[in-house]
Length: 347
Image 1 (tube, one colour):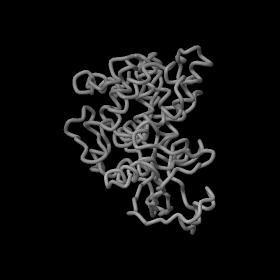
Image 2 (spheres, helix red, strand yellow):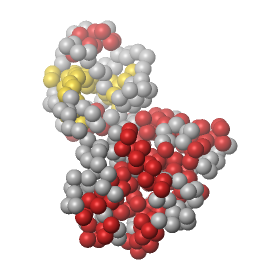
Image 3 (tube, rainbow, N blue to C red):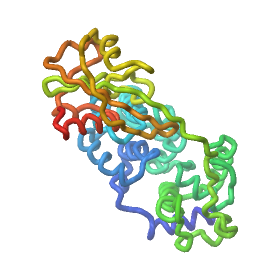
Image 4 (cartoon, rainbow, N blue to C red):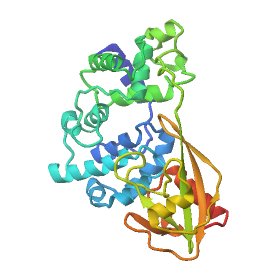
């Protein structure tokens, strides 16, 4: 066993996290769910979503049998909605190809939709004790600092170097504890900002600390100007309901319900004529809402109109009452726009 792994395993017993709701279980369904939710999302944000999700879908069979709309509704607000679509597809794959039992190796787990190399390894290690390395964001940070690895970890060459290092450090025993120890060290001690180096169990051999580069490693992503995008959306209401569209399954907000979107340079009046054949609808401009994605920032301009009746909207569209909104998956900024309209008495 490497001294690095041995030290972290001993540290985990006394100083690691032991009270998270997905710990103290070897149920691969629960571990898998937590690992997917924790991708690019903080623990504090994930916990209530995880608990609500399990209350509705306590096992892989119930998740596989559920309508995708219901899965997306429970996921709404967590972002990165491809995770939810893949979660649903993977659950169906476990039922159809594996008889409802999760495969027990990282290689087989990685064949399921949405399960990458590190996630598959975490499930295999935690649930089945397989000797495999993980490499999530916390582990990358710990390894880059401790071993003085320079270069942005998202670059292929640096990531390959980190994978090789992670595999070389695997302990002979205790591999169901070691991955959690690495993640906990990164989450609670070797944090992204203000690392608590005095409390680190391996600080004596940390290259970043020795050279005073704790705040320089890992190397940051090369900075680029954040692209700006803009679009208009129609908030059309009638008899206490709002008009929503289910977006295509692929792309931004795939599979979620959203407001009708204007084409570039199109007016709201022209949009409803093109989409629905409606004439004479008067719109007023609402307050812009900004939403930041990973790679760009979107400014949404809402255009509001009220109709006396609910004309047929056509395929893919539906009128949704305020009470029904919680049952549908809506993008966070769209939900915010609609709820603002409710609070202001517009809906």
